[in-house]
Image 1 (cartoon, helix red, strand yellow):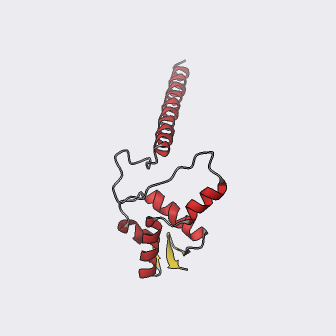
Image 2: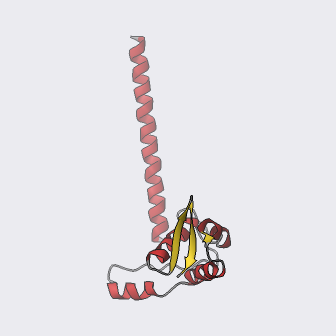
Length: 135
C-alpha cells in the first residue's frame, strides 16, 4: 500500500511539472510572436540601438514582385558585412559577431546564410564555424 501512494505522488509530481513546462513554453512562444509583430528580437525588449538595421514587414497584400525588389536592395548591415569580408577574406563567421555586437547574433547568422544562399558571399565549413569569402 505504501508503494502505491509513492507511485501516485511521483505520477502527480510528473504531471505537475509537465504542465508547468507547457505553460512556460506557451509564454515563450507568445513573447516571440509579440517580438516578431513588433520587429524586435525576442531577447531584446528594450529599444534597439540607433545603428541597428530596420526590418521591413510586408503585409499580405504586397505583391511578390514588390517584395523581391525590396529584398534585392542590400541593407546597410549587408553592406557592412560585405565590407568586412572583403577587408578580411577568409574571416571566421564567429569573428564577425563582436564587430556587429549591436545586432542580435541570430539575426546576423540568418542574414549571413541568406547572403551566401543568394551568392553575395561564399561560406566554407571549418570545424564549428564558417569561413567567409567575397564573391
